[in-house]
Length: 390
Image (tube, rainbow, N blue to C red):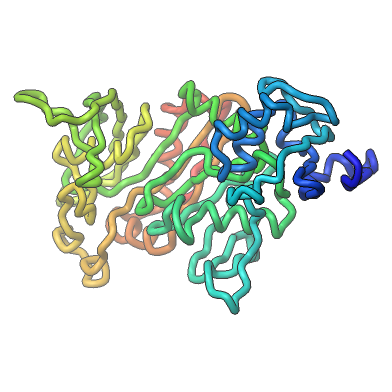
């Protein structure tokens, strides 16, 4: 391995060093295994670190001995450890992506996404302000505003990665980048979790997969709901129409893949005339548009939700002109709690939504008390009474 650069890391600094950029010599590249790569298989580290290289090419390089771990041939199923050295072919010479680029803010002179900064307890990017609810070494909890997609161009995941890199919450590794643990719809606001480490991603994802989590959403629906509802109706997502479809109880169902879906809905309060209700919804499964589709199927569509034929805000009797001109629905991920680790977070409403709730339903303090009662009773993951921030 003559000619390869060797970088010595002090034991004191080692926990803070996430990765060393690859050094290319004689058609080979040497990379150092980082903290968030520790314990992963060689083939999976390389697939994540070199997304532009086909898995077959990576497997072939391993089979031919072109991939070495600490100067020795290695099998793909061997697990790497922090500080190990991986030598791989210089795939940049094949026209493939050398490796996934680090997350850096683009130069304003060259356009691209708006610069990201962290200030006053929030991530700021252009006109977006994303409140930070909590942060640890392993995760970041945000209060996502409505209208901001989690994935895609100029989306929340890109903003988070650039902010995390700039703040030192995370540094580039071979196979891990900060990412959402779950995903809220673009029009939904509230608690959105991101992992900042492999351990954080593994822990929270496992809890969600095994449903050891309680999630409570707050919604404003058309009509009155007198008592608790348990909606157990299978759903399928129609990609062409971009909406969820509830399996019909009679007749031939459409040619879609239906799956079980369960939602608990608990009334919180209603307007005096019953034209609108504030409800707490607990999705027991995680289907796309589940709460919206289930409520619409029960004759309680979200006000302002055109996708599911929700009425406009001008139908709410006694609403002021400012409220009648409102266009979007209100579906807010208000509260989430996990069993292991035993953690819980609540994200307050956006200012405009808070004003709307106060205008329609009255005393916010009374609403908070009711929501805390509902959350505590429903929360199997909570070790103590739930705290709600409205």
